[in-house]
Amino acid sequence: MEERTLELLTRQGITRGAVEELSRLNDEPEWLRKMRLLAWSIYESSPVPPWKRIDLSSIHLDELTAFAPGEKPVADVAVANSIFSGDEARGGRIVQTNSVVDETLGSPLDPSLSMKGVVFTSLEKAAATHPEMVRKHLFVDAVKLTENRFVAMNGALWGGGMFLYVPPFTEITSPLQYTLIAAQSGAALFPHLLIIVGEGSSLTFVDQSATIGADGPALASQVVEIFANPGAQVNYVSVQEFSRTAKNFALKRAILSRDSRMIWTEIGVGSKVSRVSAEAILRDPGSEVQLLGLYFGQGEQRLEYDTLQLHAAPHTKSDLLYKGALREKAHSVFNGLIRVERGAQRTDAYQANRNLLLSNTSRADSLPTLEIEANDVRCTHGATVGPIDPDQLFYLLARGIERETAEKLLVLGFYEAVLQKIPLEELREAIRNYIERELE
Image (cartoon, rainbow, N blue to C red; front, side, top):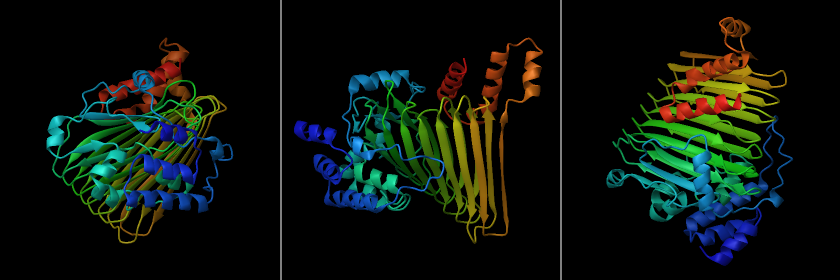
């Protein structure tokens, strides 16, 4: 990396010049350079998203840096101190610090997987080594540059990122992991993950975002695109634990083809403001998705989840369960939509959002919605918001358990329905330990 260019980029704000310099620095092909500049034009002409429950006025883009160099020693500490260290056996791990992926920080892809044709590298590198696959999928089918202003910004300024390609009929038994470490305050980060799982293949993937130090990124604008080809089995787990100064906006969309299966788990405990859109498109018959969410808010955190279960074909199935506990002045918002398109008969869809209020000043808004254009379907939804059940608390207190311990047990029990479905035992235990510590 050129020292002078790096210095200029580090000082560069969110500008067209930063986009051009980033593309030149990476020696990108012309098609990618044009895509970045198109994204910038869309960004400039796009209005601020009409997110009614999130105040975007505090984000001053002219004060942010578009690029933050990596910091290896900091990354080592951050990985060790995060909720999920990922010590379980892995097939490979990529670590990105700030805007830079340094593959020496992670774990190389298992050689046996490389021999089978699995590609697991930074998106920047994949654009050079596998341009056909990247060009075919990046901002083409799953996520479009025109989605909103933050997505366009990601399209213009994404750095590092991750690319995963699993060839057809390949079983990956050890999880793969991408870890983003935010180690510079005032920076804007634009990670982009592109995951393509071939026909009949299977894997577990962990997507982790963490912070080292008291201050994290001022802004993180994330995009994740997942393609599950016919018969694929995808287990995607996201752990968001940015510091409570960050503003995090993410759009994640999965396209499920015929007879594919996906378990999608969103875990959110970090950020001052976080808005995650998790959208599953069941494009072909026989596709199924299970959407799980676990969030824990405290202080003045604001955690918002927008979910979409889009049934575009007949004989598809979706099941959503999101659970959150909130204390102090934390506020959560859940906007969940089940949409069944015309002709998508024999759809089976379920959606439930459960919220536990641990203080009189915490708040949860839950807005589940159905849009159905077919007449032979089974779709149900529900939501609950309330404090700890006084009868359950009394039961534990009557057996000599101290109130603090009893409340802690009830909160952990509240989450258990989601925790039991997380595929990694180490991660399940890490989340339990984190919540238990925070409740002390």
